[in-house]
Image (cartoon, rainbow, N blue to C red):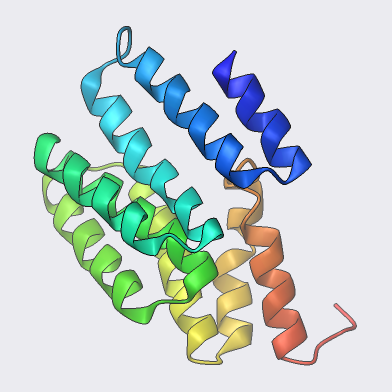
Length: 168
């Protein structure tokens, strides 16, 4: 039920209530789900705090979960959380940290999703560096894969807009 409240509050623009509901859902899931999955999920969902300008809170959650999550999965969760936050903040340092963590993760585990998030992060770097065509090239194949995140299409639109390309 908390997940449904999260969705409802998100639609209504009640971001703090949505975050609280989602946090309660994760607390409830702790009883039944694999602790590793929940820790990674908490790191990923910490990006929501960025939407209410609570970057420090998001980083505290990531740091806490990294400490209690087994290696190398702590790297994956941290990287994804940083990448999702950076879609809003365009924080180059966080994106580079995420890419390093993904690279380290891939030395230990082969997860195809890690490569997709590398493309996501590299697209963000291209966008920050004003190479909008390259960013679009990296984001375009991710639109379907990450459609549930709702982040890729707005990033492509940002690139088209910044590139003053209104015909595509």
